[in-house]
Amino acid sequence: MTEHRFSQLDVFTARALRGNPLAVVHDATGWSDDAMADFARWTQLSETTFLLPPLDPGADYRVRIFTPGGELPFAGHPTLGSCHAWLAAGGQPRQAGVVVQECGIGLVTVRRGGGRLAFAAPPCGREPVASDLLASVLDATGLAASEVRAASWLDNGPRWLALLIDDPARLLALAPDHAALRRLAKVGVVAPQPAGADTAFELRAFAAPIGIAEDPVTGSLQAGVAGWLMDVGLAPPAYVAAQGSALGRAGRVHVRRDADALWIGGDVTPVVEGRVRL
Image (cartoon, rainbow, N blue to C red; front, side):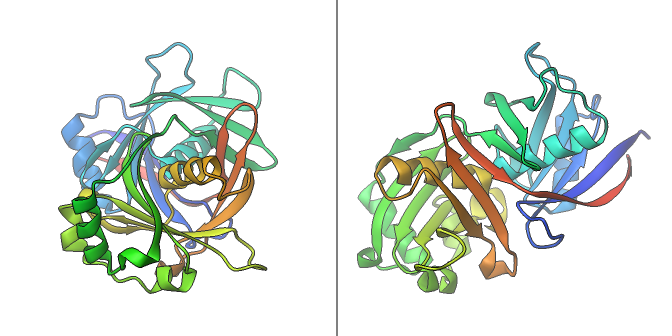
Protein backbone atom coordinates (compact mmCIF):
# COMPACT_ATOMS: atom_id res chain seq x y z
CA MET A 1 0.00 0.00 0.00
CA THR A 2 1.23 3.50 -0.87
CA GLU A 3 -0.04 6.86 0.33
CA HIS A 4 -0.34 10.02 -1.76
CA ARG A 5 -1.59 13.53 -1.22
CA PHE A 6 -5.05 14.05 -2.71
CA SER A 7 -6.90 17.24 -3.70
CA GLN A 8 -10.39 17.80 -5.00
CA LEU A 9 -11.09 21.21 -6.45
CA ASP A 10 -13.96 22.99 -8.13
CA VAL A 11 -12.84 24.59 -11.40
CA PHE A 12 -14.29 27.56 -13.29
CA THR A 13 -16.02 28.87 -10.17
CA ALA A 14 -15.19 31.03 -7.17
CA ARG A 15 -17.98 29.32 -5.20
CA ALA A 16 -17.63 25.67 -4.23
CA LEU A 17 -20.07 23.20 -5.80
CA ARG A 18 -20.92 25.46 -8.73
CA GLY A 19 -18.16 24.51 -11.21
CA ASN A 20 -16.62 21.28 -12.46
CA PRO A 21 -14.94 19.10 -9.80
CA LEU A 22 -11.49 17.64 -10.39
CA ALA A 23 -9.65 14.96 -8.42
CA VAL A 24 -5.85 15.27 -8.28
CA VAL A 25 -3.42 12.60 -7.06
CA HIS A 26 -0.04 14.14 -6.24
CA ASP A 27 3.30 12.42 -6.89
CA ALA A 28 1.75 9.47 -8.72
CA THR A 29 5.13 7.99 -9.68
CA GLY A 30 4.81 4.21 -9.75
CA TRP A 31 1.10 4.14 -10.55
CA SER A 32 0.35 1.88 -13.51
CA ASP A 33 -1.96 2.87 -16.35
CA ASP A 34 -4.52 0.40 -15.02
CA ALA A 35 -4.35 1.85 -11.51
CA MET A 36 -4.92 5.37 -12.83
CA ALA A 37 -7.84 4.21 -14.97
CA ASP A 38 -9.37 2.26 -12.08
CA PHE A 39 -9.10 5.24 -9.73
CA ALA A 40 -10.65 7.59 -12.32
CA ARG A 41 -13.58 5.20 -12.76
CA TRP A 42 -13.92 5.07 -8.97
CA THR A 43 -14.08 8.86 -8.54
CA GLN A 44 -16.74 9.07 -11.28
CA LEU A 45 -15.78 12.69 -11.96
CA SER A 46 -15.42 14.14 -15.44
CA GLU A 47 -11.65 13.95 -15.00
CA THR A 48 -9.08 12.75 -12.51
CA THR A 49 -5.44 13.79 -12.88
CA PHE A 50 -2.13 12.37 -11.74
CA LEU A 51 0.85 14.66 -11.14
CA LEU A 52 4.30 13.37 -12.11
CA PRO A 53 7.84 14.69 -12.55
CA PRO A 54 8.30 16.21 -16.03
CA LEU A 55 10.07 14.35 -18.81
CA ASP A 56 10.57 17.52 -20.87
CA PRO A 57 13.22 19.84 -19.37
CA GLY A 58 11.07 22.84 -20.25
CA ALA A 59 8.14 21.71 -18.10
CA ASP A 60 7.47 22.34 -14.42
CA TYR A 61 5.41 19.17 -13.94
CA ARG A 62 3.72 16.44 -15.99
CA VAL A 63 0.05 15.46 -15.76
CA ARG A 64 -1.91 12.49 -16.98
CA ILE A 65 -5.64 13.05 -17.43
CA PHE A 66 -8.23 10.29 -17.15
CA THR A 67 -12.01 10.26 -17.62
CA PRO A 68 -14.12 7.28 -16.51
CA GLY A 69 -13.79 6.11 -20.12
CA GLY A 70 -10.03 6.46 -20.62
CA GLU A 71 -7.08 8.83 -20.94
CA LEU A 72 -7.12 12.25 -22.65
CA PRO A 73 -4.10 14.01 -24.16
CA PHE A 74 -5.38 17.39 -22.96
CA ALA A 75 -8.36 18.92 -21.18
CA GLY A 76 -9.05 22.41 -19.91
CA HIS A 77 -10.49 22.19 -16.41
CA PRO A 78 -7.89 19.53 -15.46
CA THR A 79 -5.15 21.88 -16.64
CA LEU A 80 -6.28 24.77 -14.43
CA GLY A 81 -7.14 22.53 -11.48
CA SER A 82 -3.91 20.52 -11.66
CA CYS A 83 -1.84 23.68 -11.87
CA HIS A 84 -3.61 25.14 -8.84
CA ALA A 85 -3.08 21.90 -6.89
CA TRP A 86 0.61 21.73 -7.87
CA LEU A 87 1.21 25.31 -6.76
CA ALA A 88 -0.74 24.83 -3.50
CA ALA A 89 1.42 21.79 -2.71
CA GLY A 90 4.54 23.93 -2.92
CA GLY A 91 5.41 23.66 -6.62
CA GLN A 92 7.91 26.29 -7.74
CA PRO A 93 7.76 27.25 -11.42
CA ARG A 94 10.92 28.01 -13.31
CA GLN A 95 9.54 31.34 -14.57
CA ALA A 96 7.81 33.92 -12.40
CA GLY A 97 4.14 34.25 -13.28
CA VAL A 98 4.13 31.30 -15.70
CA VAL A 99 3.73 27.55 -15.18
CA VAL A 100 4.54 25.07 -17.95
CA GLN A 101 2.54 21.85 -17.91
CA GLU A 102 3.55 18.73 -19.80
CA CYS A 103 0.69 16.50 -20.98
CA GLY A 104 -0.22 14.23 -23.87
CA ILE A 105 -0.25 16.97 -26.49
CA GLY A 106 3.04 18.51 -25.32
CA LEU A 107 3.70 21.67 -23.33
CA VAL A 108 0.89 23.98 -22.22
CA THR A 109 1.58 27.40 -20.73
CA VAL A 110 -0.50 28.51 -17.75
CA ARG A 111 -0.41 32.19 -16.89
CA ARG A 112 -0.77 33.48 -13.34
CA GLY A 113 -2.18 36.97 -12.97
CA GLY A 114 -5.04 38.93 -11.47
CA GLY A 115 -5.81 36.15 -9.02
CA ARG A 116 -6.88 33.76 -11.80
CA LEU A 117 -5.12 31.07 -13.81
CA ALA A 118 -5.45 30.91 -17.60
CA PHE A 119 -4.02 28.42 -20.08
CA ALA A 120 -2.85 29.13 -23.60
CA ALA A 121 -5.21 27.16 -25.81
CA PRO A 122 -3.46 24.51 -27.90
CA PRO A 123 -3.83 24.64 -31.70
CA CYS A 124 -7.30 23.53 -32.72
CA GLY A 125 -8.02 21.72 -35.95
CA ARG A 126 -11.37 22.25 -37.66
CA GLU A 127 -13.19 20.18 -40.22
CA PRO A 128 -16.66 20.28 -41.78
CA VAL A 129 -19.18 17.78 -40.47
CA ALA A 130 -20.44 15.12 -42.88
CA SER A 131 -24.12 15.65 -43.63
CA ASP A 132 -25.21 12.13 -42.63
CA LEU A 133 -23.43 12.35 -39.27
CA LEU A 134 -24.82 15.83 -38.64
CA ALA A 135 -28.34 14.57 -39.33
CA SER A 136 -27.86 11.74 -36.82
CA VAL A 137 -26.47 14.12 -34.18
CA LEU A 138 -29.36 16.54 -34.64
CA ASP A 139 -31.81 13.68 -34.26
CA ALA A 140 -30.07 12.59 -31.04
CA THR A 141 -30.05 16.13 -29.58
CA GLY A 142 -33.60 16.94 -30.66
CA LEU A 143 -32.53 19.92 -32.75
CA ALA A 144 -33.97 20.72 -36.16
CA ALA A 145 -31.58 21.59 -38.98
CA SER A 146 -33.23 25.01 -39.21
CA GLU A 147 -32.14 25.78 -35.64
CA VAL A 148 -28.41 25.30 -36.35
CA ARG A 149 -26.49 28.28 -37.71
CA ALA A 150 -23.16 26.47 -38.08
CA ALA A 151 -21.44 23.19 -37.27
CA SER A 152 -17.78 22.20 -37.13
CA TRP A 153 -15.45 19.54 -35.82
CA LEU A 154 -13.05 21.05 -33.25
CA ASP A 155 -9.94 19.10 -32.26
CA ASN A 156 -7.41 20.40 -29.72
CA GLY A 157 -6.69 17.02 -28.15
CA PRO A 158 -10.28 16.13 -27.32
CA ARG A 159 -12.44 16.09 -30.46
CA TRP A 160 -15.80 17.84 -30.31
CA LEU A 161 -18.60 18.28 -32.81
CA ALA A 162 -19.74 21.85 -32.14
CA LEU A 163 -23.13 23.31 -33.00
CA LEU A 164 -24.06 27.00 -32.93
CA ILE A 165 -27.71 27.84 -32.35
CA ASP A 166 -29.45 31.16 -31.73
CA ASP A 167 -31.69 30.50 -28.73
CA PRO A 168 -30.14 30.05 -25.24
CA ALA A 169 -33.50 28.97 -23.78
CA ARG A 170 -33.69 26.21 -26.39
CA LEU A 171 -30.15 25.20 -25.49
CA LEU A 172 -31.02 24.82 -21.80
CA ALA A 173 -34.15 22.81 -22.65
CA LEU A 174 -32.29 20.17 -24.70
CA ALA A 175 -32.73 16.59 -23.44
CA PRO A 176 -30.46 14.51 -25.70
CA ASP A 177 -30.53 10.79 -26.30
CA HIS A 178 -27.19 10.09 -24.63
CA ALA A 179 -27.17 6.44 -25.69
CA ALA A 180 -27.37 7.57 -29.32
CA LEU A 181 -24.68 10.22 -28.84
CA ARG A 182 -22.39 7.63 -27.30
CA ARG A 183 -22.20 5.98 -30.73
CA LEU A 184 -21.76 9.26 -32.60
CA ALA A 185 -19.60 12.00 -31.05
CA LYS A 186 -18.93 14.29 -28.13
CA VAL A 187 -21.21 17.24 -28.92
CA GLY A 188 -20.89 20.83 -27.75
CA VAL A 189 -23.75 23.28 -28.29
CA VAL A 190 -23.32 27.03 -27.95
CA ALA A 191 -25.79 29.92 -28.07
CA PRO A 192 -25.28 33.68 -27.68
CA GLN A 193 -26.84 35.25 -24.60
CA PRO A 194 -29.40 38.07 -24.92
CA ALA A 195 -28.31 41.68 -24.62
CA GLY A 196 -27.76 42.71 -21.01
CA ALA A 197 -26.79 39.25 -19.78
CA ASP A 198 -23.69 38.95 -17.61
CA THR A 199 -22.13 36.44 -20.03
CA ALA A 200 -21.74 36.45 -23.81
CA PHE A 201 -22.47 32.77 -24.50
CA GLU A 202 -23.99 29.70 -22.86
CA LEU A 203 -22.53 26.26 -23.65
CA ARG A 204 -23.42 22.64 -22.99
CA ALA A 205 -21.11 19.64 -23.48
CA PHE A 206 -22.59 16.19 -24.10
CA ALA A 207 -19.75 13.71 -23.62
CA ALA A 208 -21.37 10.25 -23.63
CA PRO A 209 -18.50 8.66 -25.66
CA ILE A 210 -16.17 9.11 -22.67
CA GLY A 211 -18.70 7.94 -20.09
CA ILE A 212 -20.15 11.32 -19.03
CA ALA A 213 -23.67 12.31 -20.02
CA GLU A 214 -22.96 16.03 -19.64
CA ASP A 215 -19.75 17.72 -18.56
CA PRO A 216 -20.45 20.67 -16.23
CA VAL A 217 -17.76 23.07 -17.54
CA THR A 218 -15.38 22.17 -20.36
CA GLY A 219 -12.20 24.15 -21.01
CA SER A 220 -11.16 22.31 -24.18
CA LEU A 221 -14.58 22.83 -25.77
CA GLN A 222 -14.66 26.47 -24.66
CA ALA A 223 -11.23 27.01 -26.24
CA GLY A 224 -12.23 25.41 -29.53
CA VAL A 225 -15.52 27.30 -29.70
CA ALA A 226 -13.83 30.61 -28.85
CA GLY A 227 -11.28 30.34 -31.64
CA TRP A 228 -13.93 29.20 -34.12
CA LEU A 229 -16.40 32.00 -33.34
CA MET A 230 -13.73 34.69 -33.18
CA ASP A 231 -12.30 33.66 -36.53
CA VAL A 232 -15.68 33.91 -38.26
CA GLY A 233 -16.53 37.22 -36.61
CA LEU A 234 -19.20 35.94 -34.22
CA ALA A 235 -17.37 36.55 -30.94
CA PRO A 236 -15.34 39.49 -29.59
CA PRO A 237 -11.66 39.05 -28.61
CA ALA A 238 -12.58 38.95 -24.92
CA TYR A 239 -15.71 37.69 -23.19
CA VAL A 240 -17.07 35.52 -20.37
CA ALA A 241 -19.03 32.36 -21.16
CA ALA A 242 -21.44 30.42 -18.94
CA GLN A 243 -21.66 26.65 -18.70
CA GLY A 244 -23.37 24.21 -16.36
CA SER A 245 -26.65 26.08 -15.91
CA ALA A 246 -28.71 23.04 -16.96
CA LEU A 247 -27.00 21.02 -14.20
CA GLY A 248 -27.48 23.59 -11.46
CA ARG A 249 -23.90 24.84 -11.79
CA ALA A 250 -22.68 28.36 -12.53
CA GLY A 251 -19.41 27.89 -14.39
CA ARG A 252 -17.73 31.01 -15.72
CA VAL A 253 -15.01 30.82 -18.36
CA HIS A 254 -12.92 33.93 -19.04
CA VAL A 255 -11.75 34.10 -22.66
CA ARG A 256 -9.22 36.51 -24.10
CA ARG A 257 -7.19 36.56 -27.30
CA ASP A 258 -4.06 38.69 -27.41
CA ALA A 259 -0.96 38.79 -29.59
CA ASP A 260 0.50 35.78 -27.79
CA ALA A 261 -2.34 33.29 -27.52
CA LEU A 262 -5.98 32.53 -26.92
CA TRP A 263 -6.26 32.34 -23.12
CA ILE A 264 -8.89 30.33 -21.27
CA GLY A 265 -9.14 31.30 -17.63
CA GLY A 266 -11.21 30.59 -14.57
CA ASP A 267 -11.31 30.57 -10.81
CA VAL A 268 -10.35 27.41 -8.90
CA THR A 269 -11.83 26.66 -5.47
CA PRO A 270 -10.25 23.98 -3.24
CA VAL A 271 -12.85 21.75 -1.58
CA VAL A 272 -11.17 18.57 -0.25
CA GLU A 273 -7.63 17.81 0.91
CA GLY A 274 -6.59 14.37 2.09
CA ARG A 275 -4.63 11.18 1.41
CA VAL A 276 -5.12 8.32 -1.03
CA ARG A 277 -4.10 4.87 0.21
CA LEU A 278 -3.90 2.14 -2.43
